[in-house]
Length: 275
Image (cartoon, rainbow, N blue to C red; front, side, top):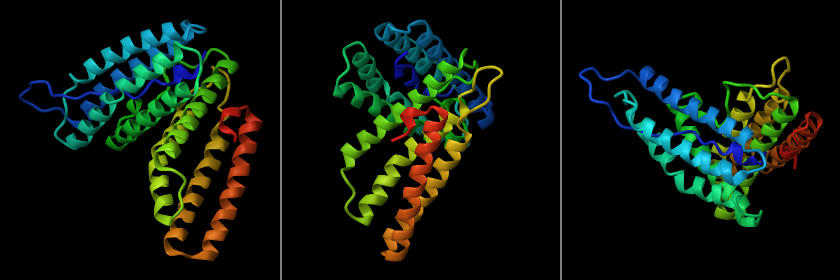
């Protein structure tokens, strides 16, 4: 199965059902997460059933996505933090053209534009998922099906590597958009832009259940990732201060983190997560 099975973005929507008593935030979260859980499961099942036929999968996914958007728009929105939920709705709905582009890319032979489509879609999904997580949503902040573990270890690893691949393509899109950082301000802007992708990568890797009877293989990799991110933030702060000693120390630590992360990724079979 190609990585398109991993493009199941956090679903989105909005709107308020007419009622004399407004819903609580917990009720909004529960109803929205049910819609997202269903979509994520449908996408995972469609990916399995359409293995080797990405064009068929793309058509099925677009159909399921459209239904999820329509259903989400009927979710009653609680007054508490309603603006954040509406931002999530807008960010999610805005993904539709990118999803269509990705579906079209997988219906044709692979090309550089296909990779760009995958990256842009994952980037937009990561941004929507970040808002979902801020609101308190769970299923809508994920791009994986947590309701049903993969049948085999091979399919588990394929799913994990698909997440890494898509995240890597998203980083390439960001690099094309912002260019190579040349100043402290540039680096800070770049770090801000990649934060949703980093968060989505770790969130999805950690949430993906392993096959029944197996154990997760990603915990140590995620821990190294998070340590590396803290060191990148330290590098960002050192650049802003112009502290040359701290800059050199942070650079050295980030290099060590990168080496450790690549080593762990290769050890457990996350080849798409390794540089």
